[in-house]
Length: 207
Image 1 (cartoon, rainbow, N blue to C red):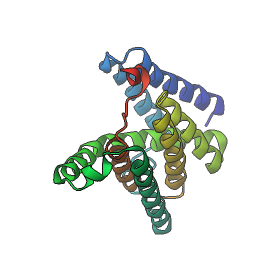
Image 2 (cartoon, rainbow, N blue to C red):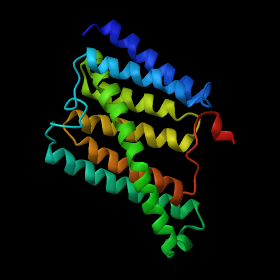
Image 3 (tube, rainbow, N blue to C red):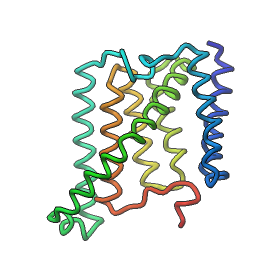
């Protein structure tokens, strides 16, 4: 692959996404050209459902096991922080409605989480790996890009930097993108409900 072409393509896609978040966020149909550009890139650069992690890619059990352990540790870290910063958490945890709402948010967030993981790893991680040739540099790059897309929300920027870097690392090592999406779908509502913290990004963060 032509590295200059990959770098240019990545830059265009990233800044178009930033434009969708910051400039023309009220015109959601303008996201369609971005998706078309990504699909064309997948087609021209020989990507398929297997390289995107959606089908035919055999996941590594050891990698998935490590992923599970880090996910559990991450969940408990959010929970412990929430105990310190959210005085209403203990009262909420004994309410059945709270857990029902938590479960519904996870379920409804799952398709969006899978979409984000396919974009973050199936597109950005694959392209950065082709550009840098390094799994470590790719993981840090995905983390930085993912965090930048969640600017200026400080909590989400920190969480997505760590989560983006780890997800790319696991993806490149053969981890299941479906497990990554499930972990993403659980952690996002956990931040929202346990910390009682907004998930808004871009100009909507100040509303």
